[in-house]
Image (cartoon, rainbow, N blue to C red; front, side, top):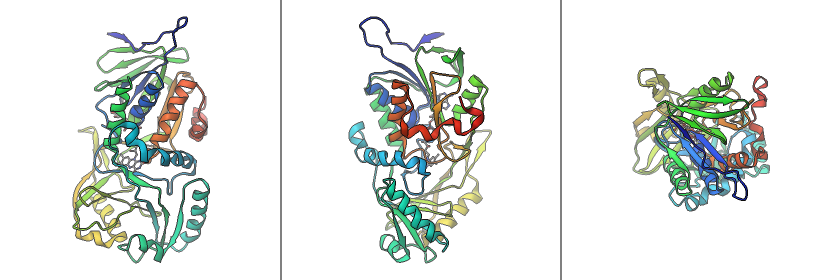
Length: 392
Ligand SMILES: Cc1cc2nc3c(=O)[nH]c(=O)nc-3n(C[C@H](O)[C@H](O)[C@H](O)COP(=O)(O)OP(=O)(O)OC[C@H]3O[C@@H](n4cnc5c(N)ncnc54)[C@H](O)[C@@H]3O)c2cc1C
């Protein structure tokens, strides 16, 4: 079956509506769809499974953190700081956003100089940050282990309910006129000259597109790019581990807590349970096709967390999962660019475990790039040309 995604016109006095097909219904797909639809574009989102079925959904909460982030991403976080507190009003639904502040702890004396410098640079870039000594960090979190020597504190950081936010973006996009098709897996891109002209679904249906294409399918992006261009994007799939504890009688801490040299990230989640993530990984299960936890990694992550907050030793692991895939980029910086040789196709992937917080700032710029044709300044650092074999 062949259908056309075009509801556009190009004749005479009628306005031209840009036609856009987006592959992927995670936060990037549906947030960009919302921005495009509100600007009058004709948008079709093709999602293989369901909204928030990938990294943008699942257990716990996601960090909205500038502290310790790659410096190239900080201007986007400054913009995201403005958007997150009002996003629930803009979308007309809760996002669960809370500005609890982020502490990046350290335990090594030689990190004191780093923390001083990092605090100055982050602050200069628009991310207010203080270097706290051992006493000052305990004024914020009294339950910290004695081994913590200090922290970088970014009070404008926070956490959000990623599942709810992604669904809120999708609902707002649909209200604004975007079409979202669930259960629509794209298996092939058809090139005509320097354009992607059609997308084939797993069902055999062919979606013709005379307009633009945006590939935001996270782990599903690289295979489509390889098939259409013969190029291998420098990304790979990881399965980040998430642990949620039993409930505490009293919350053992209130901030969003990370660490400079331990793979630990701690957040409080509703019901005074502790969510633990921060860098431990699960593995791919070929039989289920999904990620699964490695028991020794759950134990290792929990031990790291207790080393930071001894009070949580009284809690137990209630749930652990590694079922949400993410893509890592080789240099740990996202990729957002036009695909070499394909003038109508943009790609955004390789978020490397920190794509959530900046999504509200990246999505409107992706929409701008699609509609206006030029790369917005804040997206320039994420070009494919930093990998020479992939430049246009
Ligand atoms: C456990 C975990 C914890 C994280 N914690 C944080 C955090 O604290 N802070 C932070 O900033 N970031 C965090 N991240 C990263 C962040 O969640 C992701 O970077 C972000 O959600 C990626 O969004 P996305 O829309 O690109 O991808 P996804 O949400 O994965 O969406 C991609 C969608 O594409 C669909 N798809 C795939 N292939 C195809 C195809 N061929 N055709 C059609 N559809 C397809 C998938 O079904 C999926 O729904 C975390 C990620 C994970 C997994």
